Image (spheres, helix red, strand yellow):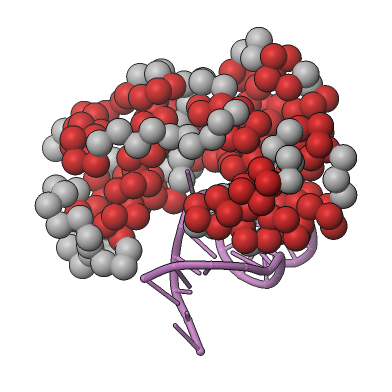
Amino acid sequence: MSRPTTRIRRAYRELLDHHGPQYWWPADTVFEMMIGAVLVQNTAWTGAERALENLRGRGLLEPRALAGLSPSRLAPVIRPAGTHGVKARRLLAMTRWYVGHGCHDGLGAWDSAALRASLLGVHGIGPESADAILCYAFDRPVFPVDAYARRLYRRLGVMRGGEGYEALRAMTERALGRDAARLGEWHALVVAHGKAVCRPRPLCNECTLARSCPRAGLG
DNA sequence: ACCCAGGGTCATA
DNA sequence: TATGACCATGGG
């Protein structure tokens, strides 16, 4: 039995070899990435992407433009992302925060801990969204722990059972190093693997981590 | 007709 | 702190 850090490093190598670089996060600007992080919550990326295109077509990927909208005007625009009522409020809260703190230039100088704490104070931004934003938009070395990561870690045997979000995040950052690009790549690979293996059935037969899928019937 | 998807908030015990 | 209801569309 190897140590958790060793297993995670080995899995990283396997998934990178098998799936290749994922080139995440798909966004042209910091603000667009942040919008995507909210839109994709508990939703397939295809829906978030449609909502994003609707926003783009109306010039609403500009913070100032978006900030001028009411929730009831914004909601129908992002409808394909699902839960559009709550997401409209969340996007506006996040936009107010972003503009109010000087956008990217004003926020870039903050240290990671302060930036994280501030993000968590925004309505609609929880641990995973905050860490995704830190990692992909602000290039900070943090790992966003999602449902796919929990499933994979369980099957890799690096979890005993009730580890919380912070424990898994710390474990991963210890295993892969405090490197934003590497942690971001790992998060993307974990999602790619989860989607390939778990839906609708194992599509990823040659992947040696196929047994990490709870629905694969392999354990 | 289900089940789920790159979560988070809020109320309740 | 720990569950559970709720949000809501689109694809399998």
